[in-house]
Amino acid sequence: VNSNLTALSNSILKKIIALGIPYFVFSIVIWSIKYLMGSNVRQQVDINDLIMIPIVPFEHFWFLYVLLIMFVFTEVLDYCFKNNYIVLCIILAITIITWQYPPEVYLIKKTTQMIGFFYIGKMLRQNIDILRNNAFVILCGLTYIVVQSLIIFLDLDYHGIAFVASVA
Image (cartoon, rainbow, N blue to C red; front, side, top):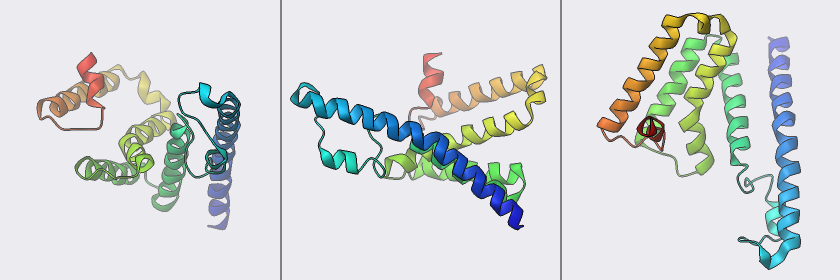
């Protein structure tokens, strides 16, 4: 059990480093440019913006926070339950609940919107051979089209995901 917990900790630490370094480097670079440009930028920044970079995502780098939350959350669930299908059910339940009761916090809202797709992708990566099965790929495509059509037909607000189907 201790070695599994150590492996989990190491995995999470690697993700924090892999996503944290680009986040901080690019955030500081963009903050510096905006700070030096002063009033010539659309949104001016000050020293408080620099101090808040670890807490509040800077500019369009919110997706790195969301990605990190998804990695950590799914790793912990995988560690606790050891069954991909149980974890997927938990994640889908969270996603469905947040359809009806969207969180006020932007990062949590974005995380709950995308974590189901993220985990399905993670499962497919672990079982890459399943993608070679044409029937499975066609079934997934048809399922996606049916779900998106229902979302549009029933006028459910799934936070912009229906947009993909409406463009196609």
